[in-house]
Length: 385
Length: 163
Image (cartoon, rainbow over all chains, first blue to last red):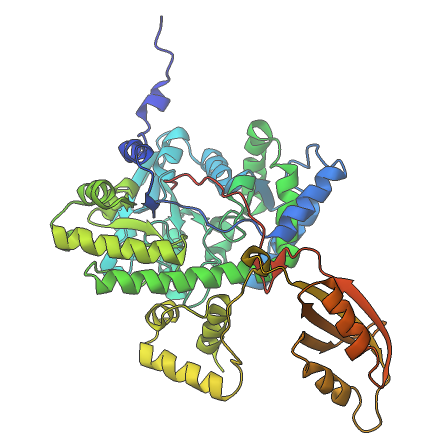
C-alpha cells in the first residue's frame, strides 16, 4: 500500500508534550496547571439562551458570516472596549473558535514561500498553521528582560524581502506578557515601513490586569493592515462552544470569508446565540471571572517567588511563566520530574518555541486550593533537588 | 473604600475562614495592611459578622423554616420601623425585610416542626397590633442559599493539558 500521508501533514511538528499525557493517565491525584482553559462553567444565562434557541428550533445554518445581531454586537464591543470601528456587514466573520479564524486568515494571505514572523514563544498552533498555509514560519524572540513584549529591534532582525505578515498574541500565551500603546506603535511603524500585515490574536484581551486593554487595530497606522482575532472561549468560559471571530478591512474579510464558506459554512448556531447573550448581558459575569483570575494570579505568583521560583508578575492571560534556570534543570526535565515526583503538571516553555526555554507555563485557571497545594509541592520538589 | 477593599469583601463573603496570609496574597498586599483594612471595615460596620453556612437538612436536626408575608398598617411617625423592630426580637425570626409588592414585611421563621411554626404565627405574630394579614409559606427544600448551590453537581472532566 502507498503511504497516504501528505508531506505537509508529515512535516508539521507533533505536540511537544505527548509523553506527559501518557504519564498523567497513570496518575489519579495530579494537580494540573497544564490547562489552557477557564475552570469556570459558562455563565448560566448564556447557556439558558442557547437552550431556549434549541427549543425554538433554531438549529439550522446561520449566515456564513455569522448571525447579523452577533456581528453587530461584536462591532459595538470593539468600538466601546477598544475604540476600533468595523462594519458588521462587511468586516466581521464569526468563526468556529479563534483557532479557525487563525487558520483561514493565514490561508487567505499566505502564498508559497511567504514568511510569517511569529512572536516567540507562542501558542502552539501558529507555526503549524503557517506551514499548513504553505508559508515559512520565522520566529522572533520576545525576551524576559522586555517583559516578553515584541520589540521593533527583534522584529527588524528577522525581516527579509519575503516577509509578509506578523503574527502576535497579546496578552500572551504562554508568558502572560502584554503590549502597551508605545510597544504597539513600534510594531506599527515596522509594519508600515516594510508593508507587512499584522495578525493579532487577542483572545486574552479581557484578561488584562494592569494597564490599558489595547487592540492592535486601535492604532491608526494598523487598522487597515490588521486582522484582529478574538473569541468567547476565554472571556466567557466557552471553550467547548467553539465560537470566535475576526475583524478585518473589507477586502481581507471577503477573501477570508470565501475560505470560511468552504471549510466551515458557519460557526455553531447555538454557540452564536450564547455568545450574543454574553456580549449583550454577560459583562458582569465575565468581569467576575476576570477578577477571580487576577486574585489567583496574585496568590500563585507571590507563592512561587516565596518558594524560590522567580516569576515576573504577568499582566495578562491566565498563565505564570516562571524561570526554572536556578534549579539547574532544563524546562522539560523540570516538568517531567515535577510531574513524576510531586504529581504537579506544568508545560515546559520550549513546547511554545525556543524562546520559552528555561521556563515552565503554569495555568492559574485552577482553584485556589489547588494553586496553594501546587506551590507547596513545587517547594518540596525544589528543596529535594 | 477602594478596589482592594472591595476585593477583600468579596473574598470574605465567599469564605470568611480563609487565612489572612492567603487573603493578603490574593489581593497582593502585605498581611498587616489587610488586617488594618479589615479592622476598619469592621469598625465601620461594613463587615457585620462572620458566620458559618449550615446545611441543617444534612445535620438532621429536623427543624423547619417558613417564609411569612405580613400586611401591616404603618404607624404615624414610625412607619413600619417600630413593628418590624418588635418582630425582629423574636428568636424564631431569622430575617425581617420591608418589601415592595402586595405585602409589606417578609420574614423567615424557624421552628422544631410545622406545629411549632404554626403556633408561633397564630399566637405571636398574627395577634400583634397593626398586622392586618399573614401568609405562611413552608420551605420544603433549599437549592441555593447566599449564593451557594446546595445540590450535588456532577464534576466535569477537564483535559489535563491544553494549549
